[in-house]
Amino acid sequence: MNSSLRVKRLALPLLLLLLGMVGVAWGVDGAAPQPLRGDYPDIGISSRAVVWVLAQLHLFFGALILAVPLFVLVIEFLGIVTGDRRYDDMAREFLKISLVGFTLTAIFGVILTIALFSLYPQLMGYLARVFDGQWIVYLGVFLLENIFLYAYYYSWNRLRKGGQKWLHLGLGLMLNLSGVTIMILANAWVTFMMAPSGITTDGTVVGDIWDIMHGPLWHPMNLHRFIANIAFGGAVVGAYAAFKFLSTRDPKLRAHYDWMGYTSNFIAILAFLPLPFAGYWLMAEIYAYSQQMGITAMGGILAWLFIIQAVLIGTILLAGNFYLWSGMSRSEGATRYQWLIKYIALVLVAGFMVWVTPHTLILTAAEQAALGGVHHQILGPLGIMPAKNIAVNLMLIATFLSFQLYRRADKVATVPWAGAGNALMTAIYLVAIANIIFVGVYYGYFTNTVYKVGSSVIQVMSTLVVIISGIIIDSLMFRNATRLPSHWGQVSDRSQYALFALPIAYTWLMGLMGYVRSSVKTHWHIYGVMKDNSPDNYIPTIGYAGNMVTLVTVLFLLGLLFMFWIADRRVKS
Amino acid sequence: MSNKKTGGASLIIIWTGALAISLLGFYLLDHGIMSMQGLPLNLDLTPAQ
Figure 1: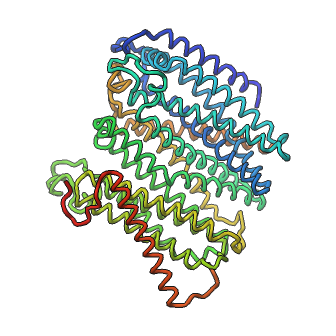
Figure 2 (figure 1 turned 180 degrees about the horizontal axis):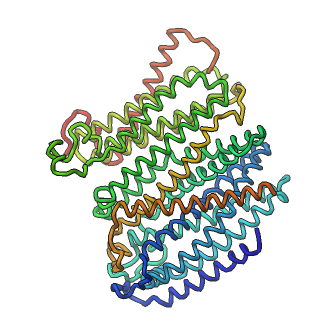
Figure 3 (figure 1 turned 45 degrees about the vertical axis):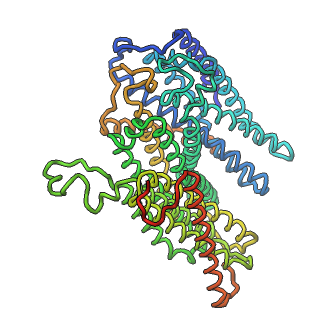
């Protein structure tokens, strides 16, 4: 780490502290301020656009540096348990990639803070007052995170042997605890703006800091972001591994980066599988808090972004599955399962088509007359949630099947009950699929809404039963299994492009859905309490939002290339 | 998979058993989840109230 970056790190907490104090000073006791149009600084360009770009970049890099140390810790632990030095080396390389991310997160954090306090002084002053001393706690944890990061990274070789390794693991644990604490503190600010708690309707603080933080959306947001960050982090480091794999012809290095890419994809897909359910929980809580807010998200103009979301999630699932299918070529045993791939692909494509089918079409009068209404007679029923629920659950089950087949490809079970185990696993798949389709169709189309919502929980649980029972059955059935030859590095170059597709789709998706989450507040800074009277107090057009999300995605990807370049130089040195 | 050969009758018993266990398990799952939400399974196509 060079000295200029260290100076920036030290300058950051001091600057944030200063700004926090200024913010506190701006606040006044009592109700929330109600700024008028003239109270917002006019900088010639949209203040919202400036904050949008900065916040999103800060969040992208923040998500990355939260996630990578988490699986670095797990991989290092695996290295200790298995005694395989390769795990330890890979964990360190993962951390090395993310180091620049810490600096970039801090830089964007500082610029974002300055922009927020400059462009929205009343809002930030009020938030500083509501959250009171929490700014100091945040800064303290931020400092701790940096201390643990340096200690964890630079002591890696020194604390490698014997009991010292556990001490090193402890440093990693502390790094992760501080990272997660930062995330949940920041989440409390965001969810307070969406669903405020601990205040009266005019914004007067009546609760303690716990009442304020502990709003109805806080836990769902914590879970959703935590899981999403892990999937995102896995996808990003997977792209690094793919880049390294493609840029070398050395078989040993290709084997190493192939393994690294596989591990990254494993993390990205495994974390992705429960993600839609966490998203459902968040959305359900939004609806429960304010039905109007929920309808704005999923029934109004923003609903169209959920169609784009479907395209992006479809891309992630197709790319992730394609990578697993390609990876089967590493093992000779994979031929036993290849016949199933076409059926998995069929489920994925069919599910994808259902998911992207919109409910209400934007039509001209002539088109509407030709169609006989705004809903297509055959495709119309596929536009509502019961059909989407069936599609997404079947796609997740199909993805887990790919994953399970991949894991089985280089093994032959030796336990005497292998036949019965396979029969049970197959039966669980078949009954779960039938159950998901049945409750989706029956409760979704033939009974009333209360059953429709209630049955979606059954579908989620059916998918989780498949995943959990698959992991349990396989871990027992393939204990002491015969291993078939498997060759790391023996994978097509084409498969590596799937690893590039994943972080791009994830980044776009996070940008898009983050925008939706923020936009559901409509013309409120703090929903129902403090109105946004700035010139940008409206939901922009889909095209504008799409361009903004694309801009931040491209900027982040450029930042990522910079990160890879630095990491590559470190590896070479 | 296991190299052990299993007879036809055993295969039928194993697969029937596996299906029966799965069906029972998912029925109980459905029943439990709907009960927790205060809803009956309502499988007789009666419009729900």
